[in-house]
Image (tube, rainbow, N blue to C red):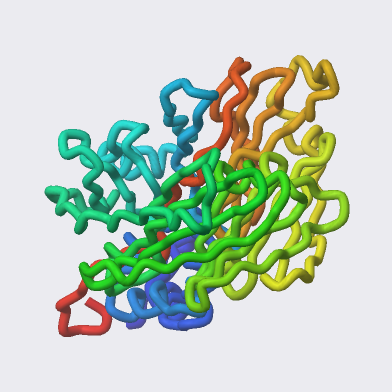
Length: 394
């Protein structure tokens, strides 16, 4: 005799669950709703099929658009004072992972550049010897070959007033230690650069280039963005000076109308093509996208007052005509911006992609900090485990 299940008792939900999780499209929609890359990595260990779905490049592009890599912190400096690292508060889910990554940071004054989890650091006990350090894979520092002596050509630079050297990490998955050594000088009329590139452990030939530009002292000390084989330099002359490393030549890009020069706007690498520029005008942040050749499109304008409404800001207006908001740093693909509310001394981090949450990084910072162009963010793409399972579903 066939027995009827007691009233209220339901059959096992396993077939329904299997039908949902067995559908790649539905599985993708579920994974897309995870909040953090760390959750995505944990989901990927369920099976090889889940791993393939989570690590699919097209899926990861969609995931990043909704959940961009979080900023972990930024190095700042006030005048000649020592550099200072300002960590960004993290949700509980990421606190442990962020703590492990930041535990591998060197002292602030030893950091030259940061790019997707790689830090260019000066070895404290080795003079001007540099190494590339990984935030995720702590290991003994392997010194880089000593950068060449990029002595300035005396016929090109007559009594240079300012000389500054930069080391910038190149983009590269196979050669993680490749970098650019850039020596710049300005004598009031001529701005020049000598440079050499480290690839496969060998420094290349020295190359030199110069151009005339007025008011370019800000070019020496301003932001420099290495994008492919070009270095974009913010200037005080209301333009971007671009150094083409392939042709050893300069060209200039005009800024969008109404945008100031070095010190008022920051550049960002675009994920697919071109670059972004974020500037603060009054109590508004403006996000521009450029093609790298002088064409700009205004992507968005954000009210700082509205975005920071929940921070309980006591003072908004500044004195002596100071700008009320100053941009410190912009993440890759303009996914976040760090800025300061000058009157209150509050430093904020705003996620531009996704839900635009604003977090307070520091309070009562009245010093005139300037960004050091190396915000530290989570590594992207996530590093997934390597599975040796035989079964697709195990």
